[in-house]
Length: 351
Image (cartoon, rainbow, N blue to C red):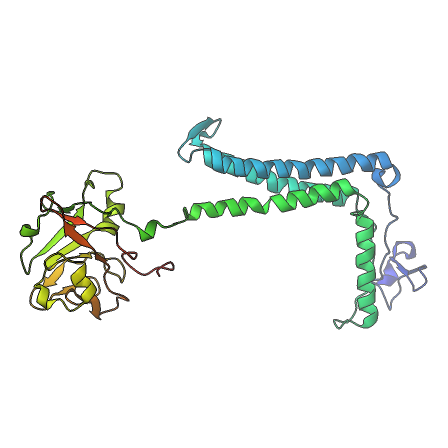
């Protein structure tokens, strides 16, 4: 069907440059029918209604702020292993439920407040604009800035101070929820990686016999593994602590010890080194008596125990830490302090 078959009164109207409306013809059958008359909202003509909408928006933003505070309080106060009964969900984790509820409410309230603000208080006048080239001319830039200023003015952000302040408050508090989630990355290490259970006067206990070691128990060329006095396998933190405190005890003829400090920190040629490889933390257990070399079975890092346990082969980055030892009045081997550097693989605080 052509435009000639359509009754003239049913053809779409067209507005010219002066805003007048004309009928479409054969040359332009798809003319712009124009915009319908603008219908004012109740907030546009009644300031009391506008104030009510303003209070609703402010209330939603305030609810978001309270929900964010509730999220943070729940994260801090609710134990992670506590469960509650919520119908019809049944028994669920109380912390997860509280975090999900408060975070969802905070997000919903910000979104609902923004939507209600736009629907009831911002200008809803439809404006038609012609297509224009992608390149922005100075006139277009000036028009964009003018439109931005006009939009800012019509948003009434400067005049509706209650909305502005509560919105800023909600947007400022909400990111704190994400900051709190960083806590799940784990507690800050502090100085825990620098210290072990070893301290002055703590006895060296044989890992196999669970008995304190005497100097006479360690023969030349032997390899013995030791742990700190008081650390038992049934302890809850045994694996965590032994991973830092495990020792290799080797007796070397004092004349064969090349490193001066190693000799000073030993007792009659008995040296104590960390058992934890400085590459990726594997336990070292292979000892060669003639060369005094120890080998990590994981990646073949090799350390010379007669020369400060320096690395002579493999990917390890630094020597094994040495524990300074001596003997007490009963002849038992004891630590004279803790390691002077962190044991195991290098980490960002080493120094």
